[in-house]
Image (cartoon, rainbow, N blue to C red):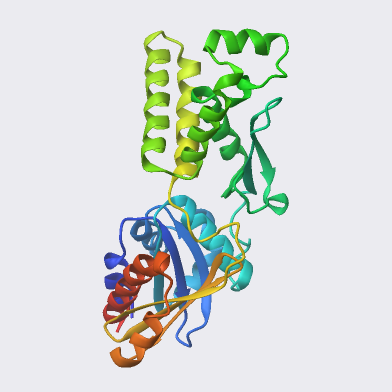
Length: 307
């Protein structure tokens, strides 16, 4: 059995995702997320260190399943969703410690700007973006956006030092709509807007470093990483309430992805012939096609290697 598991682990991609361990009866033992699936999963069969309590669980693993995600942020959300829906015996927490939040844009003339709000209070509208995991990370990302697109300085209600900062930055109330539009594009993950924000922050970081302002350079570097976190692809959790089923098929294996209230919260896989699978695959919403197909190919490969 260990030889089969080694083959499965070697076939896992060096990408972010969520993994699942099952025992010989098909029961889920543990679910986790990884920045590097192959490395993370293989670590269970080496020195467990602070995870030694998992040794009995590892000895029971007979099957490994995984889903590849487009980003670490997406993997974090997927792990949280799956564990909130059903938490296996060996998991201790329901998907990490990050706090769910959203970004709210105020475009009013007096006090425009961005603010971070708890996801429970988020509305699905044009001025709300997210949801995101990690309150501190998201606040850093908002600081990064303010650094290059200071919408807050385009308000009519500025006072004292804010007036001076707006003047130094060359920002006037007439810039409000322009800045709001650029921020909207960046928060919607428009590639050109995201690339522009990153380039501006990189320039500011290099300038600070060149001026020996290393603390400022480090701060901007942290903001860059936080912006990358919120700008990375993440579709497994949305602000909407849509319900859907997505399916992927490969090599006689049908993988079903369950989306409930805008969240991908479960996945199952079973043997299925091509003719019957076609009727399921045709139900898959277009936006989920590539995710479903890619992970069905991975699932089929892992099943074949695990036999």
